[in-house]
Image (cartoon, rainbow, N blue to C red; front, side, top):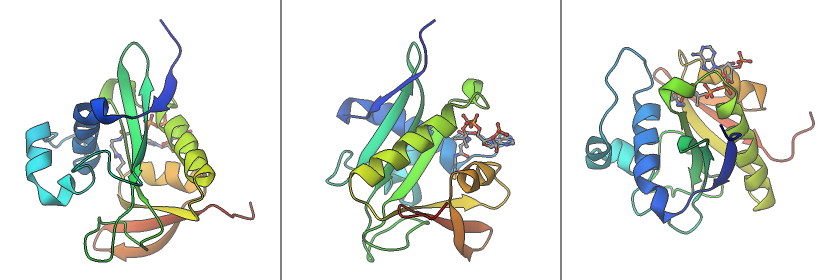
Length: 165
Ligand SMILES: CC(C)(COP(=O)(O)OP(=O)(O)OC[C@H]1O[C@@H](n2cnc3c(N)ncnc32)[C@H](O)[C@@H]1OP(=O)(O)O)[C@@H](O)C(=O)NCCC(=O)NCCS
């Protein structure tokens, strides 16, 4: 078996990214994951990938004998944005790992490499939205995301590129 490796996502990865968006959108293991068609037909979710790749989009695919996870970000506007929007110059990230490969460090690796890419691209920060009950929250905190807002049960978190720790 090959090692897990992360590579930039391209237009050919859209079907896998949509599948991962479905996993992130309905993250609770007891709830059915929406199909790719359902994800793209739902404006709450489709906005995270419609037209991929658009200007400013960046993503990574984790692969090990095929794709096993993805993390990506998109730049939104005041008019049209996702749940974790904080500013037009702060991209919002999404992440998911295929069910059978979770808790093996793949999500952390994707997240760390995506943060590094965002810093290299000159972004001052990244944001995200996570339901407070999602254990992913601990992963985000461990790499420097802090809560800056709450909408219902969802937290908006931000990680500044210029951190002191
Ligand atoms: C969140 C997700 C991307 C993390 O990827 P992963 O490869 O499983 O994560 P890692 O193995 O790198 O684990 C990193 C940390 O995440 C946290 N974590 C993730 N899933 C967890 C779970 N089910 N229970 C407890 N902690 C969990 C832990 O803090 C863990 O650190 P630890 O292993 O040192 O305890 C993955 O679980 C996933 O795809 N979940 C469903 C989609 C989702 O919720 N996306 C985020 C929406 S905001």
